[in-house]
Length: 308
Length: 281
Image 1 (tube, rainbow over the protein chains, first blue to last red):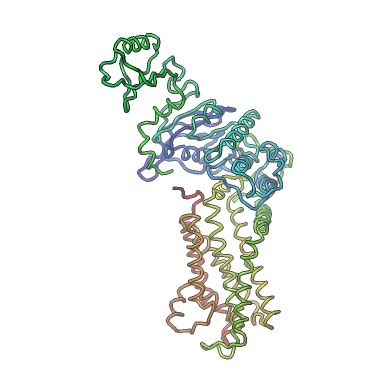
Image 2: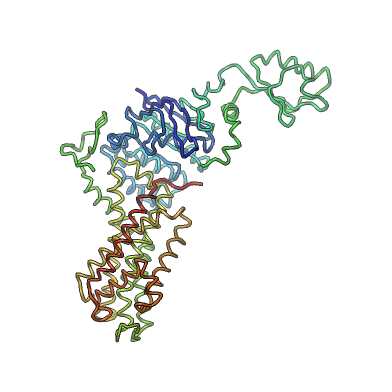
């Protein structure tokens, strides 16, 4: 049984569809990432899985129960941990006090000293929350998410707003948790975060899943395709080129091919023959960022205006 | 909502199969007590905030009392010193400050910080955690009333309420009404930046026009206007329990009723508009 199972999930606010026909599974022990631009429906999806929000349609199971079922909601909430986008930490308590308080909400919490050690705040355990750095507060925030010893941890954009070292710290912490057997479901709009952490990723765009798979295979990354880019030589047009072009933007030619050896040969031969310069010539395998930008390109404009 | 389960031993971990209702040894009611303790801890861990929350009404009372000296009030109150008027009126201030102003701002801040959402997602029933917030607020209000009475008595002479039972009832109804209104108000404030100005302006305007600083002549236009709002009634009910004006019925039923109606209105707004998640964007 997967930790999370989602089939044809739909959610609308009035006539705005926040999530449309979304399906995926999160296997136990995995780190599953929902990747997408702001307003794509990531938070809505995760809130439905937590039982915070009701859905409009489809089937959802979190740890084997329907998160919207009030009769098992309390049980479910004792088995999941939640870390919100906001740094939800109260300023005046000490680290130890706030963890001890929340430990009391759970039937079998992790011991407070164990959590303090896990989040690496031993030296700050008796300091006020407000004296912690942003990265330390985020770690405490994650600590509050795992104090109940959850099987499944939801992290909603866990590193948004953190500096690079704060992000690394948070990643290390998440890796540690998964090594202890916790299933993690996170949302993010950072590609490097997905590459660093996720076993599986689904790309959400405009309320729909546009691609899903492992970070290394998603969107055809594992196919042998490469992208060749160069600036169109002056005085030539695309039709002068000996090869088929996939896109041309502000003079930058982009060609995707699985047969780069032959194509480069033709291209460079043509350039030498006509004495053209192929400025900025590059040959790269698809990065996750390429895939992501390609998948979400259509919605790049509306997502700016979409509600966060 | 749910009842404590009788047989959960401390070492037993929660069941791995879904269960309904309660699973904990610690009953939900005991949880409220624990949570009130943490609320109080949070309040006192911010001494500056605690001082200003508790101290403002006292500072006002002492300052205005000193300025007024032996001045007498008119407006049909007879030969009564202004200071005697300030003790009940600032008791009203204290209740409104704690239950309405501080509570409304606390709830807005916690909502916008995401604390309410996290609370919602914890396995304990939300009512137990929220009622702890309200109870803690009432403790602060009662503490302020206690300090005011002590200062009024020690500093300005024997000015305790003439009718203790009526005073207590008024305090109870006032705390209910303004706690409900504070919760309702918090749902009307869109974000944390707006909460200070929005709540304060309602607070100070209502108080000033309801007779906090000076007695308002019954039957005057100002009295008629402020009579629609609950603050005026809290002040007059408290005054009545201090036998002001002389011979007033200490059981100010009309005032208590108006406050209660406002309180119910506050509950209604709170239920209709309550939200757990921050308003983003």
